[in-house]
Length: 92
Image (cartoon, rainbow, N blue to C red; front, side, top):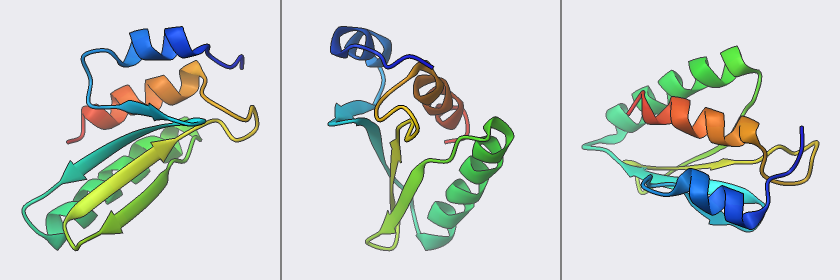
């Protein structure tokens, strides 16, 4: 899959809570408590497994989750990453 250019990434992420950070796209989430954060991560895991595309997930400060997505085999951001980000947005 081809890497996306910065302009394309910005256009595809416009109007979302995702942002470009180096060679990844990132979004931060905050939940009411730890259990809600973990439940969200588990829902993300289901979609990621279905897509066979696995983001880096960090649970921190007991109720915050950060998700970073990139296509490691390509060394950057592809449409596959944007599609996974959109899928994650539906499970919030």
